[in-house]
Image (tube, rainbow, N blue to C red; front, side, top):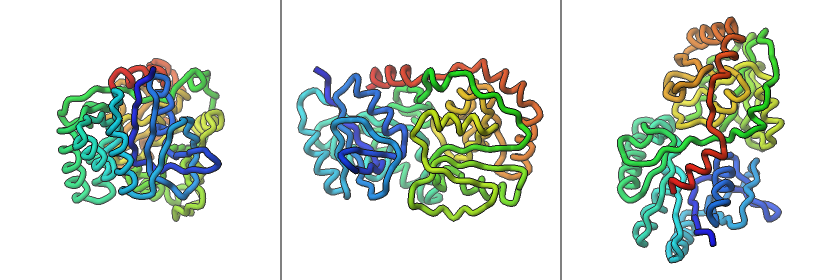
Length: 337
């Protein structure tokens, strides 16, 4: 009989026709993968907006406010059948969840996917750093930690995993593409901390550079009306998503903070050179085909021109990359729990 694994998330989940949907692909794929090892119970926040990815799990509960959420946390913490408790990321919601679990005699596992210090600073400024530090310090003292990067742990003890969505489909021979024009692609949420608005501003009125954004939400306006920028909805069809990568020649990740971005691995799997800004230069590691630039147009243009001039040579180098797979990630994650 499988052990129960209760997963607590701050992500918003949409319910319709007896199905649950989310926008964050990690909230779908990680619990689904762990479902082969554990009996999964996923708890999240209720969304009134339609979301893109269907979560294929039997046991999902969503809550419209913190009080109903914490009430369910108390109920689950009474389970005495050797259950385990996994919290995804540190937010005000999950911070309270960790406190309630500890109060009920449970020690949760907290999965840190990105640097909360950077994210909260991007959203709230210096105040955000203090807010996150307060939550981080307490959560780390009452939990076991898993992260995708050493630096995210800030010296705390924890296990390291390597998130990935890569499978044999992603690793098929990529489409050959000439780089006559600079066709940039960004896949991800349209949020301030993701740096996408600063990128849009950088390429404003640059008609020789186009940017395609894949990550829009239905019925949402982003106040982006530039002729060289197109926004598409979040894509949950793997074949269509791969086509977006194959139809563009450079992938750009403008985030102010990232842990282990899976879109970067997707771009490398399709042998599309990647541009990141120096705030997240740590994501490069030993991977070929990733280029760092400063957050100004002159440096960005210089980097793009270098990639264009050496495109074929860069793609040949990228063949040397050894990318983590989804299967390997789930196996190690389950063992780390």
